Image (cartoon, rainbow, N blue to C red; front, side):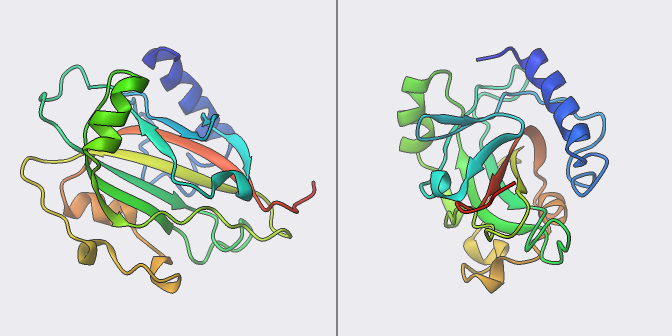
Length: 202
């Protein structure tokens, strides 16, 4: 795994080059944002790392999430993960941004892949929005997908109703910035990927 410093530099460069910051993610990710933990995301044996390209068929199963403890955070800190699409339904007409793919609260950091199974997946945070994989249409340009990790305030209690419904139309036009502010969530980690339909051709 790359160092946090190298990850932060690669993240900042990639967000700029992808027109995310400045761009649609500017309200979510401050221009001077410095992650305090490396948010690692994998689908099977393929890692998503600041813009990795996927086909929709590679993302049908829940992503594996791994992140280490923050150096200056309380040891009992818990975290919320949001996966969202700023390009729904298409990058040329993102009228349903930010489409809500996955929201989990109560996650705990793990220091190693082995620890992931017990401390993150095993303690299993509370799923507030069931995972629904990316599904860009084959005639759409690739979408960008943001993984946002927030440290929760002590004694946070969020329920499914606080996030929104599970139906397809309910997931449209989610407002992660307002959601984070309302619940006192502090952004600590970011990763992102791109994804196109299985039949998309450049």
